[in-house]
Length: 359
Ligand SMILES: Cc1cc2nc3c(=O)[nH]c(=O)nc-3n(C[C@H](O)[C@H](O)[C@H](O)COP(=O)(O)O)c2cc1C
Image (cartoon, rainbow, N blue to C red; front, side, top):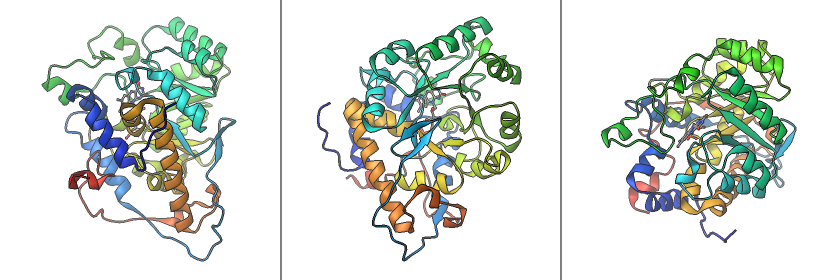
């Protein structure tokens, strides 16, 4: 991989902005309808502040952990992003290489190239396979079986996309994104018919950890755990599906309470910085999914830029931990954060305020 000189995530975002045309930029950055779920994700994160502790020895700060039995150098999962190949030609393979090189796990979207079997051959895992249901039960069973055979260490069913939302940035330009998703496409019939029976069927027939992605409320989280789901994944799809949801960071506490430590909880939605990751962990998440920053890094410079983004995130995470007075992830807890009024209005890139000042 070529050496990349980015010193800040800001520079990576700015480079992505320069590299992408409007269609691809809007596909990556945009959300559904009024984009309020999207903005709320950031507003929610900006509404939690730290209550730092002092005079603890932080001469050695460790941010490594494990997830589904495999190591994570930082508590971050690369969230599934469809059509990754439109941001950089290597697509899913480049992300796989970056994840392996740095030491985090990729959740591979089923609507990406190269496909899951090719990626598994090219870059050894651990890796999680994310599926949209685009066929009947036999179709799904075949894919899960093949994912297990290919060595995937987890299977993620995305449950917040039972129909495709209205992404006005695309509609206004009459642009159909590369994944070509449209709710009137025949294939979405299978997504729309998914139920808790689908979950029961997977648990009864396959021996692979199951993640349900798109949980928003305590009731569904509790039902997931009762049905044997292995990971509850809080997400509003980065504000790209149902508009007017709570910020994911604000949905997290009730889900964590409902799950009560029985299985790990993952959260994504608006997490762009190391401090954001720390806030999610303080509120009980085991790991944080990061989607747009992963795709922005791909657009900025492919696999090498994704590795660089992860290195910068690691630095930010460890710096925040040291300044919070915490030297190990298990020291992060609810008493270290408090909810306040945010100080500025939020938008998808408001984690990078210097962009507005022309830096
Ligand atoms: C361009 C783009 C494509 C996405 N494609 C998928 C996908 O194929 N499958 C899926 O489960 N989620 C998909 N998501 C949602 C992400 O997995 C994740 O939930 C979201 O990006 C998290 O928010 P963040 O981007 O603010 O980190 C996509 C998100 C973006 C931005």
